[in-house]
Length: 306
Image 1 (cartoon, one colour):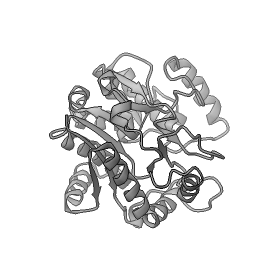
Image 2 (cartoon, rainbow, N blue to C red; image 1 turned 90 degrees about the vertical axis):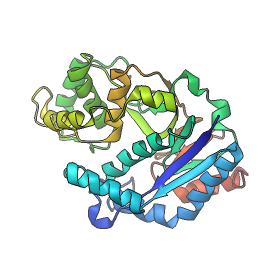
Image 3 (cartoon, one colour; image 1 turned 180 degrees about the vertical axis):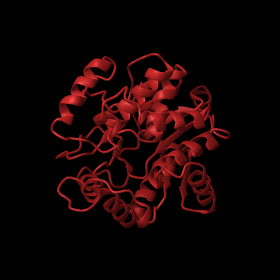
């Protein structure tokens, strides 16, 4: 069985970055800060992922800002000029997932800000025959139970939050949940949804075929554009709608009845304003980009040389 791990490092030019709220305790847009921190930690992040792939005995690929990406970006900007550079990068990772699936049976995708923290072999520990391994943003119920969250409850909460003018970023898990729910309501007749985090994905080539991510892609983009102006949802919700890879991923899972399995904290630990990192974690997704904090933790817990 052929297996591979891959990641992306696309250093978006500063003039193409969309403005986002700062990280907690910071005072500049998180897009600018992310660009700086990924660049300054490039060697550490790349080496960490390369070493993990070696431990797993699989091939590793890091796709960067090269001629191939330039061609992809040009195509997207020409066909969908309203889609941001950030979202183009995230569609590109789905494209590379499908490209690798032509050669490899099982693939593990890691965002470049994912740091392996153990030598445990993902492919030996996670049975991908059980379904695509991916984390549901709301599985731990920090915000809501997406499996039972009803549309009328969603609308009441949205209107209530609109009264205090609390509009989240269109990158937030809430925004993507609502956007997915809207597509599911239109195309699946189901007012429920999952908000998946595609920062870590484990899957097989057959599962990607069933997901059929790129099938009817143009029609979905048109629908996503229409939903921004559709009064089915209140203004507060529609302001969060956009064009992102995770919304389409969640919609395709339901539309095509694709099996998924939850990557819990030990395989997808999201570092976000946490005081510490549990000792049992295997993959740390550094959402808040505190790479130095993770390095110190790895050294302290004698994991830096894994």
